Image (cartoon, rainbow, N blue to C red):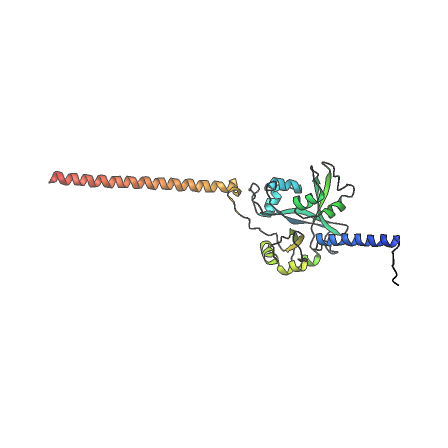
Length: 283
């Protein structure tokens, strides 16, 4: 005869709790595969960089991006190898300087953000900050707020993933660990070449399994000088002036040469005409 075992209410509660914790753990692992814990031998804080992709329509303005991160547009332009008044184009990669520090053994760059109409954590983390953080970290960083009822104009903390180099990395010459959000069509060769990083250091630092749209760390010995795309609207006024002067001088030179050529041809014709008249009179 088969015996049917029915768990007690306490056992059901225990099983439900275990399933809940397992689900949360799986979500956390899915949202962050790279290790962003604070190394024991790293400084308590450091100046580092996160990448940001210029996107239409709002974030093709360097001013809007600098306002989002609450820093000057000049600091972004210097780090990104562009002029401060440059016109950005879609998918242009920028370097944004941030201060990285430890919070409960996790490394974050805490950015203050003011809640706008219809804002919620997933929108802020995935769209505005482009997955440099996630909604779980934002919920943990703002325990006094109800994530489903965010008050208008409330100040919230957006904890961006970052990390300071360990003592061993500093001894190897690694100055920065740049936070970069991995794209579906990225590969280690292309990204390491773009940022001047070692492929071996990148592979050691990160887990690239299913890393699309997740932040990773790019170890670099120096701040990379990004090759920025050119566009007709991105030429600054300081660069336009030499171009205008060159065009003006070229046009003036062409006019002078053309005028002299016409005068020479006219004089040559007159000389021939005078010679023909003289020969006729002599005859």
